[in-house]
Length: 168
Image (tube, rainbow, N blue to C red):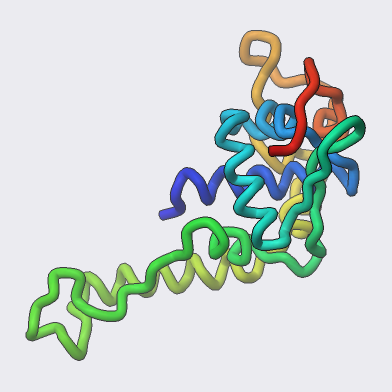
């Protein structure tokens, strides 16, 4: 139900929350979240315009959260990128369903409403803390399919990028 871009934005925001206030370059974010680096740059621009992240160019630059992760819900992030669309009228534009949805579309709208409620109830912090030692995100592997045992998400998020990268 979520667009790929919304999924990418959620991963990026979780990664920045995991970074604990430290800046991450676009390359680090892309590698950590398994989001293509160029696309991560575009998503970061959208998140920046919504004042959820801020970027700094140059040496020691990168991106960090500019929102409160305790108060920022996953729905807030999804709404910046690709808001969920509730069904308020017949998608088939049938006159007989003008004032009332058919059973199928009513049920689909109920599912969308439940998803909205669930995303609204989850903050960035609650997702990061939910893991109880487990990763908050699926991690890309660097060694043929195996994750890095004994390395936390926060440690991975803080690892330097392979080369210079600046916020876009």
